[in-house]
Length: 283
Ligand code: PEP
Ligand code: MN
Image (cartoon, rainbow, N blue to C red; front, top):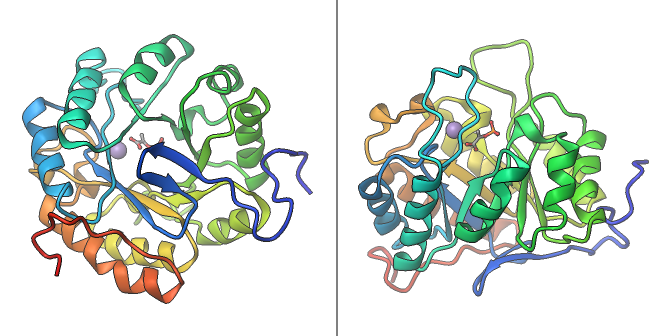
């Protein structure tokens, strides 16, 4: 078994719920859906996203301000300006926001603008960053490394927990394999295993797993059926104009429909999805 203490379940029903706002909590009966663009591009873009997601069963917004890109010549994110857009939109629409932190130096700024700090796949084993986040007073969304074993993944979470931060959510986002039809391979077996082994909530990112928009809704449904506690999904007001990850961006209409279409699956596995009172589709 893994050399973990705090991440390990102490009894079969042991779950450590993680709250990111007064009414958004991972690891309980309710499925949490996080939606938004790959990168924050402008106030108008984020406002458009927030307005539509606010009237759908979507509880939190995403958007990268600091972007880990394969090429140094690709768009690197709006940085501090992106963080300010996120916190402004969060206040205006009363929706918590999740964004990536890439280095120890960024923690203070990101923590003062976001409700949850994301550690990207490329940083999953940046142990100094994990230890520093263990001392931050903010929930952490830890994404699985591009080719990380479950032992390495849970070990990375343990680094954060062992420094005193008990607010960690794991995210399966696909792993590298030999086929290049999909961007990565979504490992739903890992979701089931992590739910059995650890007390941490587990969510799924079908966007980075698939890399193709037409695969996202079926994979999101499969993730909920497999026991995931939530989803993080990329969407954009003009998907094809997305500055990064355009092929996997859903339109806002597709994102709203996807969220509603998850409800029967959630109910079938004993979970629920909260439909906002101001929803156009609500009864
Ligand atoms: C992201 O969520 O924006 C991202 C870069 O994902 P990952 O770290 O999983 O590649
Ligand atoms: Mn992306």
